[in-house]
Image (cartoon, rainbow, N blue to C red; front, side, top):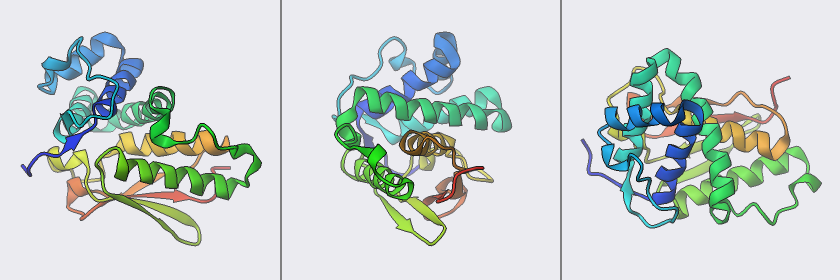
Length: 205
């Protein structure tokens, strides 16, 4: 395993809260036990940005959900957990995304998308200890994450970071009121140098 990387307490806390919303308290307890994370049962990390937990803790949570539902079943569950994670971050750590004071509704859809993606990228770099950048092409944005909790999960045969897919889906839905077909097109867990997410500029019809 690579050397572990520190993560803000709030990032893991919001993941646990999202897991609990989707799976219930008993399901969350089972996930934490299966992931070797018993120390967090009834003892979630504090809601602050101190670097008090690790990428391995986050990856172990995702992997335990995948093991619980099986690879195919976990995809929809982890995506839902990702969507809930964005909402919890917006509610509990609004300063991280810095979106509260922005009059998004006055902007065209494309500008709203770009602005929110830039804020998510900035938060990843400055608050989550997760190097990332945004690349724009004619028909899509690409959110590129150079360090990801999936590095601390077992190797996968296909992209595995469905929580992040869900976060991006919910961020775009929140920004525009529309749904987008977001997909992870490269993943560290199956050999890529970075996790890459494609966000098309056109919503699902």
